[in-house]
Length: 307
Image 1: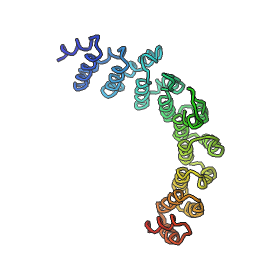
Image 2: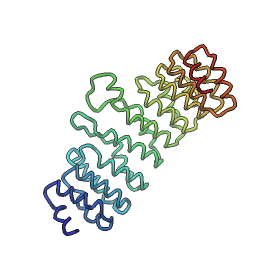
Image 3: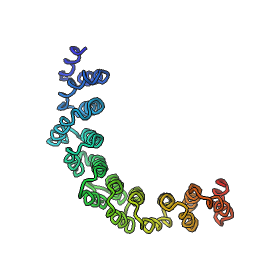
Image 4: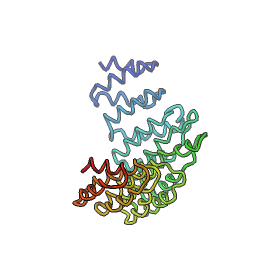
C-alpha cells in the first residue's frame, strides 16, 4: 500500500496528492505521519489545510515544532500560502489545546495579524481566537491588548453604512470582552464598566459579552453597570441583563426584575417574567401569582402559563 501512496504524494496533480491524503487518513498514525509531514510545504493551500487538520488529529504534541516552522513559512507569503487564515487558525488552536507556552509568540502574532483579501478582512476570526487563547494563558500585560481590542471599531476595509461600520470588528470586540472575563484580572472590570456605561455605537452582541465578563470577574459593582440595561429599547439586551442579574443576585434580583416590568415592550416584559420564574426561591411562585393580575396583558399571559 505504501508503495502505491508514495507516487501519488509526489504527483504534480493536486487531485492525486489529495487522494493520497485521503488514503492516509484511514491508516495508523505511525504509518501516516512520516508521509504527511513533507506536505507541510505543499503549494496548494486547500490541500495544506487538510494535511494540517489531519496531523493535528494524529500527532499533536509530537510535531509542534513542525507547526511553528510552518507558521513562519506561511507568514513569508500569507496571501498565497494561507489566503483565508485557516491554517494559522488550526495551529493556534493546537497551541492552546496543548498549553504550549513556548509558542506564545505565534499567538501574539495572530492577535495582531491583519490580512486583506478581495476587500475582506480574512484575519478577524484568527485575531478573535488568539485573544481567547492568550486570555486562557493568563499572561502578564495582556489586559492592555484586550482593552484596546474591545474599543477598536475602525474597519480594516472600506464600509458603506453605519451598520457595516458597527459590525465590521464585532467578532474581535466580542472576543476581547470574553477574554477579559477569562483573564481574571479584577482591573478588567473597570474597562468593561466603561464600555457598558458609554456604549456609543456598540452592538448588542458585544455588550452582552461585557455583562457576562463582569459577572465572571465577580465584580461587586457589576449590578450598577448592568441594571440600566433593564430599560434598554432592545429586548435582547433587557433579557440578557435580567439573566445576568438573576445569576449574580439570585433571590435579590426578583424585586429588581418586577420593578423592570414597567418596560413598554411586550417582548422585554416576557423575557423578564421568564427570568423571574427561573430563580429558585420560595418567593418566585408567590410573585408569579401576583403577576397574573399585572396591568400588562403580556405579563399576565406568561405569568398565568408559568404558574
